[in-house]
Length: 281
Image (cartoon, rainbow, N blue to C red):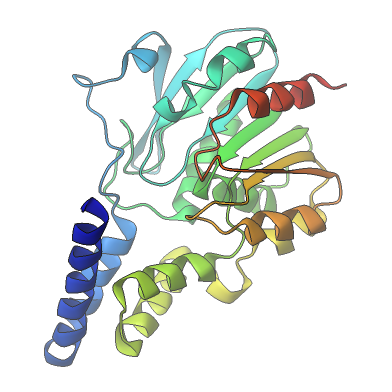
């Protein structure tokens, strides 16, 4: 029943925007972009902070008029950076954390723009990339572990800011093509060509990057870091072919395809394998 209600709601919004595009195309396009870029969930307040995040050392990084929320689990000099995905926050790492502690590392997790306790109302990959950049400048991690769109942002960081200090990258259910993300949104709402063209142009103007050339699997050809790329064959959010494409072009990558874990990829066996990858010399 929930799925039916959600389907009706989504298609109703798309129908409304399509009609509005003939009456007031600018307004329709603005609303469509807002729906695309503003997360509906994932925000936190200090009053409703999950217990998992309460038991951490926290810090705020001021960067380009934004506040980046940082959570720290202290360990040795080796630093691991955790980068979550869309409509989530740093609490998504709760199930993985016991395995990461086995490495003895200091672990840093961030909240994305407009997520968790970080500032902003709008989310986009280039801005998330700048959040990652600011965090890496401060903490100098040797490893990034990223989920979903956080993986695309992490790859864009490596493309924009080559970093020889980073040794290992773990991508979990990450997309490769920015165009696919936008097209999926357009198809979900059944938006017409007027709005579709505006969305792509608006995204390119704000991202300062051509959508058709934003591809992790193209960026990764130049990456020297060791990578562990995991994707589930039944991922309904990001198709498994995205993970396969990235793994084929990343020179030093291990690809692991799971069965039945979905997009979240929460699994003790997988986390054990990732921990072993992190502990490899």
